[in-house]
Length: 74
Image (cartoon, rainbow, N blue to C red):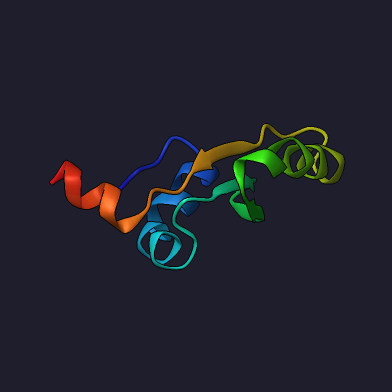
């Protein structure tokens, strides 16, 4: 499957594991690498860390759904 970005590819390829281990949290990905995982109230710190480490890249911040949220969708 062709992805628009390395960040999208990382999120899609690791989605199941992320849901199993970190559902209900947020992930920040830059240049196809996981930078941080944490709760929504920590998101600004996580984004700051990503921008400091990769100043020329655009970070992806995305919520990781809980398993029960996915079951409702199906």
